[in-house]
Image 1 (cartoon, rainbow, N blue to C red):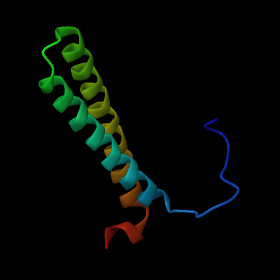
Image 2 (spheres, one colour; image 1 turned 135 degrees about the vertical axis):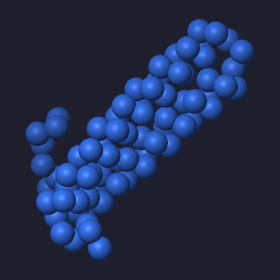
Image 3 (spheres, rainbow, N blue to C red; image 1 turned 90 degrees about the horizontal axis):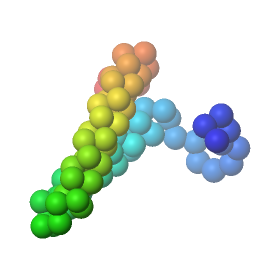
Image 4 (spheres, helix red, strand yellow; image 1 turned 30 degrees about the vertical axis):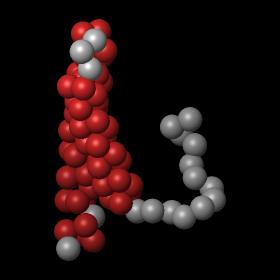
Length: 78
């Protein structure tokens, strides 16, 4: 699935896609943290905390890749 190329539709620059994915990952991390704070169920609280941490790690990975793309692609340094 990761090796398939998009054949139709709007083609967004990689940097734009990374920015969108990064914002989504940060939003999900925040939502999961909120869910963990909103429940009294310890099992659910732990699950949401783990999911929040996972999404924070995803966000960090995407941020690193976005920073690399910004260095390599001058149009993102405007």
